[in-house]
Amino acid sequence: MQVRLPKNFFMGAAMSGPQTEGAYKKDHRLESFWDHWSDLSISDFYNKVGSYVGNNFYEKYEEDIKLLKSLHLDSFRTSIQWTRLMDQNQKLNPEGATFYHKVCACARDNGIELFMNLYHFDMPYYLFARGGWMNREVVEAYAVYARTAFRTFGKEIRYWFTFNEPIVEPDQEYRHGVWYPFIKDAKMGMQVQYHISLAHSLAVREFYKAKKEGYMLPDAQIGLINAFAPPYTKENPSPADLEAVRMTDGIHNRWWLDLVTSGTLPQDVLDTLEKLGLAPEMRPGDEEILKCGKTDWLGFNYYQPNRVQAPAAKTDEAGYPKFADPYIWPERKMNVYRGWEIYPKGIYDFGMKMKREYPDMKFFISENGMGVEHEDRFRDESGQIQDDYRIEFVEDHLKWVIKAVEEGANCVGYHYWGLIDNWSWANAFKNRYGFVEVDLMDNYSRKLKKSAHWIKNLIEQRDKEDM
Ligand code: IFM
Image (cartoon, rainbow, N blue to C red; front, side, top):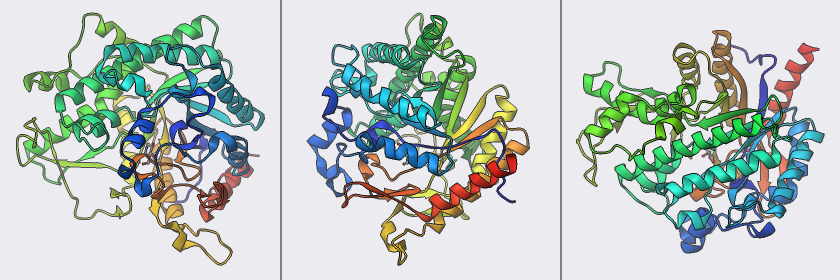
């Protein structure tokens, strides 16, 4: 298979506000969940680098957007930080708004299509202190924030997203307890997941309202982005292995896919949760809210497949029912730095699933990338990082994306994560993902890696053929 990019296909890159902006105290920005955790226990972060730094996008956004353009990328996703745009009385913070207006203007002037996400795991701390996603008031507060964002930037941004990877906070903060506040409570995890689903739906309702009232561009679109890790099991699965697949797929994928395509949650999953005493608390009228959750399109973040098998024990260490154990595929190839399996065909399998089961929903690959530790050792004499492994990774994935498109998947683009090395939560700057290096010892200066030239040539080649 040769990489020949489809025509009329977004080729861009993704990053996020909390991972790039830095300037954490500028514009009267509020304290975020991450700032609070960093203050509380900086040793939880790789090399004690907390949430404050980003990659200095706040100062360098013009340089970065020009960089995108110079690499022939046509689109760029980032996120508004709730903490920067709003004050603690849930009113617009004009200083924060000015920053995002400048980013929008810069993208427009450089011909870059901005994909704007509203939430990337970055809750204002004062709301987290009130219970975070466990609290219905926070769901309401998110709707106010979304409404404010749509009405403030509606004429400047065409492509909007409510959440990035809404599965991550229920998992990391409440089910697996690996992020602050380190809770391991399956029931809370489901409640948080449910409340995020309501928050998404209320935001979509606000989007269409704002559109109807003329605040948005006439062709504005709204979507949701999730890490839809395709589920796999053993070659000759037992009924119990298949049951593990059903619930893993149900909670991680179908939950969100049903929400954005039909405004419902998968009944078989809700039934199982009910039987096990894990069902979220739902209020009268919620069904109507969820019905508003249908979107125009979908972002598919793909890094790794989810291989599962029947759990060895019925309950986990906290006594909660267990749906699955990991299954180690004997042939797996790993990204050892991140501990994630590399399986490019997963991207194609998901594309085919979308074609079969959700044929009316268009989607794009909203994240795909390779984080590598100590990239310095791959520097050549000229000082450039020779990241051939990244080129191979992207090439292998793009081949499967193209195959899916050729076989009828409604996939309209590919965004690499992340264009420029950025801060990655508890891992901080441990694993570098960028096509562009950030030198932390030299005022966050940017330097192209080998892969930046490669992607530029690939897109240039397609654009030349188009002429
Ligand atoms: O850095 C993250 C991003 O915030 C969400 N998707 C996965 C990336 C790489 O770990």
